[in-house]
Amino acid sequence: TGRPTVEGKPVSFGSSTTAQICDILIAYTDLVLPTCEEDCDGSVKIIRSWTALDWCTQGYSTDSQIIHLKDNDDPVIAPFDPATASVDPWTCQIDRYLLPEMDASDNCAPSHKLKKTITGPAGIVIAEEADGNYYAYGLPKVTHYFNYYATDCCGNVSLVQPFELTVIDDVAPVAIAKQYTVISLSNVEDFDESGDLDGIAKMYAESIDNGSYDRCTDVHLEIRRDGVYSS
Figure (cartoon, one colour):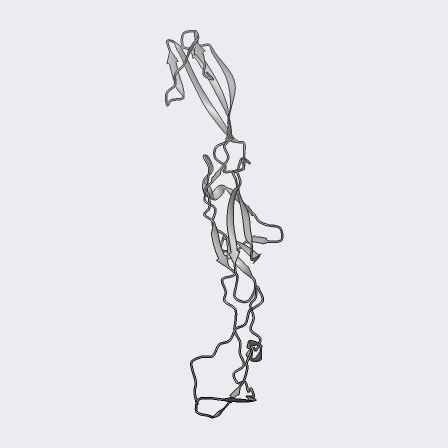
């Protein structure tokens, strides 16, 4: 039972450190030693020193007992909802993305004492900034998976909790057109209903394009006549 016995019966101490059975007085003192990091709760070794005194004979005996309280349970991380984000307007990637905060708990250590680790795809830089948040840099247009880990001060590591981020191109292409364009009418014998000679001209999208672009893909150009004009 880990407790002294008198004639085979364990001694009950309740909330006290002393107990008496008939003329036998039993007491103990504890020396508590941390077994993990400093100020780490949950795992300690206790050197318990026992003393038994016989009131009748005044004889006594002492003995020591080592008790190891060990935290073997891993921290737990709450799951993440998948997220979607668009590339930045000027590059076909997300230059800097704020990663969600880890919601981790442990049966012994408080959350602020847990060591939190985030890993991501190869080539993606992840760093903790001065505000205490983690950011990912240079995310191209694809689905990324980030793995979150939590380690308590006794070295127990949580199961991996993934965070899924899909980067999409939600930025419209930039259309740039020449402000003024001069085209010539063809000289064809095509008379309208009034008998006047009509001229015909063709204008292509490339004729007025002045460097339209998209940061992620090629652009498809189309033009149309705005309204109906007559002379």
